[in-house]
Length: 290
Image 1: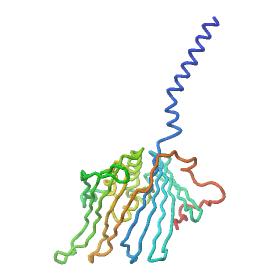
Image 2 (image 1 turned 180 degrees about the horizontal axis):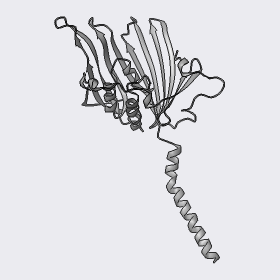
Image 3 (image 1 turned 30 degrees about the vertical axis):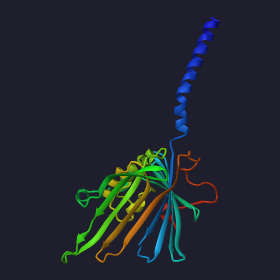
Image 4 (image 1 turned 90 degrees about the vertical axis):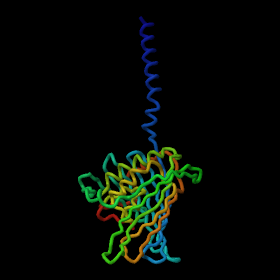
């Protein structure tokens, strides 16, 4: 009888061990979700501030539904610093929450959001309006050891002035080199595509790489189409944008370069508001990024 009990106990123990071994990879996956860290440097010239150069440092740390994005920008004119700001945006798409952090003023704010908080402004008129041309050119090249493919895009909203053949020029055009050679590169599209779609037409910032494009007067309908077409991580990009002008002025030239990447695990508390006495929580209406 004791042998039977021992045999049953051994069998149960063996079964438990097999379950733990089988579950091990899943448990480890839960504790160590896939991660993607990318850092881009974005340089813009041609601002109305004559001679000004804007350099953005964009650092994104992402899971499938989480993002921590840091944006710092410095505007210089000759030898003078006109502006130097930084802001961190933490977005949790599952919890429908964002945290905004200013590491210079040591303040932060929290904001819950719902899709009902804002109306999507895409309309039949948007769909029937000027369409951004988005083409995979078939060209490939290696950049810093990463195999990349080229995407060309152009949105032309130029319109007639009503005086002869003269037009008000208004366009956005460029190329982007995309790679899938980076570990967990699929997370870039997995996060940015649904997030851009969710926030389109709102005043919310996804805290993502494409926020800068929305500031160059690319409407949310076409911007969303561009984001949805990208299935990797941008390594290099160069584009020009001209805001409505009959004089040919206000042409912005932007260059983007991937300067660092990794798939290191998230740090503890990385997607939480700052703790300790150093930071002060303020109402979201009072939060400032400068």
